[in-house]
Length: 499
Image 1 (spheres, one colour):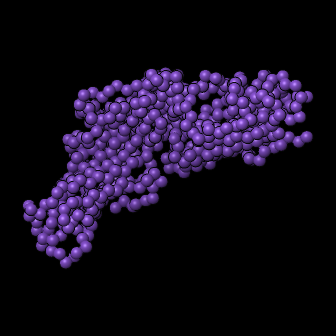
Image 2 (image 1 turned 90 degrees about the horizontal axis):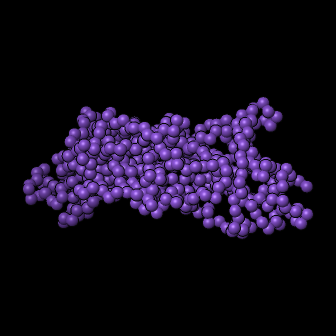
Image 3 (image 1 turned 90 degrees about the vertical axis):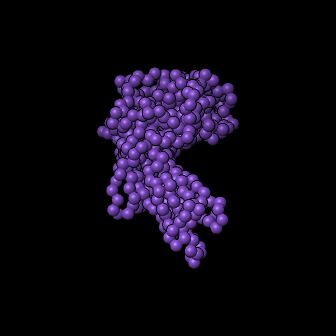
């Protein structure tokens, strides 16, 4: 039997259902599913252990022993795309279709009867293992606000009770049919090349199969002598709630995803310049913070950002990387130096950087800084609901940092990418992206400094904004979630202005 393991994403599916018949009413047949790993990649093989258990009766002296008659054992592996009808313009399903509105089953390997007519005696169990191969092109698992990509394995069995007396049973000894079900979800992480993001040539792979893919499944009983057998007749029974006609089903080998040009406006535009036209619905708790020092009518002021490359031989001692000079009114307001020179990160990576302020070089002075690590969920305008056309993007704050910097020369921040993502990816319906958002609150232009003893005593504030896009991937297969990087010397200790 495949070894059981602790699962960060949840353990194996487990179900037990009691009967309603006399002395065996307290007996619960057990059905358990166990996968061989937590996370899978497209093209991986899945091994699932199925355990059917008949509990031991308490009265061993009785001549009547209740046994389980496994009339049939069904099994299925499914991948489903679920769209929220409040966010997407979705047509009503055709007459006769049983799947829900906004649901698309892109992976469906199932059989209503993999095993049939098996007897499980009291106090014993039967164990089976099923293996199948995932398609090479599928979307990653994702539980968003407007869309979900989910995968699960489910097994059902129909089990009448047999009352065996002295090893024999009669027609009258067959009790009412009991149905037992077990279900376990599993996670899919895609590779960097399979995330569907728009490439340099403006094209993107469609990573959501347009037709339902069916993969071959094989099973055997775990007894040491059984051979793998192919699961047949997988199309004879379809689970209620999800139905696909045969002409919509294609094999994995024949599936060839089409490349198409995605509308450039599909991806949210993360500009280096501040803008008042940015629309987002922020559902993170950090957006409820009240900075009492900031007036409610603060407007956005235009920034310009220039990338600065550093060589390892320079006097600053930086490892070769990049920094960004952030200008306002033709003066450098501050410089941002990322902790890592790359703009690509992986789950569990640390992301941060150093902000260096140039208070004496311009007419403005930076008073406060707010930095947020955000994910955005942007709906393709071709599919967005008419009521959401003006706000097709939902933004969620993962981490944030706010600091008063009027007396600082330098400060730093450090965030952590969650160990379970989500990863950056794109499908025809949606684009999921990451970014660092910076908000700077400065003194007004052409300020008479002789009127103020300290910059924080200035009543007015000017606000500017800059967004730095980043890409987050799942860790490469066979590596730990945290990758070793060449990093710049980094400290979270602020540097103060000395008078």
